[in-house]
Length: 147
Image 1 (spheres, one colour):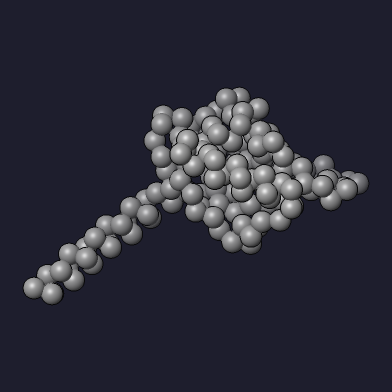
Image 2: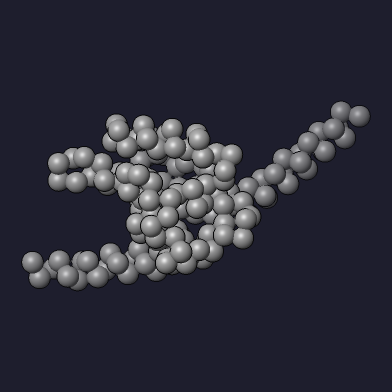
């Protein structure tokens, strides 16, 4: 039992101080954990995010699709995004949209019932912009070659 307190403190420090956004939402999609990385990425303080629906960061036009998938995952207890990265746009407090990639961790209770899902999220907006610019340059060069 002596290692529990140091391990708990270590986990809290890692999650709390990560530059990646780390969050947990319960079965109903209510945010229950919001780290410093999430504050920096999305612009919402921990007190603003905790107790709020995931709609806080989901663009309105994607909410229907998100909730269909979320409900399926909560019922089945399985998601392919536990092993694969998911790419999705997200919404910041100031209304801007960012490109994100994240992995999910299914959180289950002792009875194996899904309690919710944790996500580790990274803002990949800069990379997506560079890729768009590169694709455009390639398109222009190919068009010039064809002439």
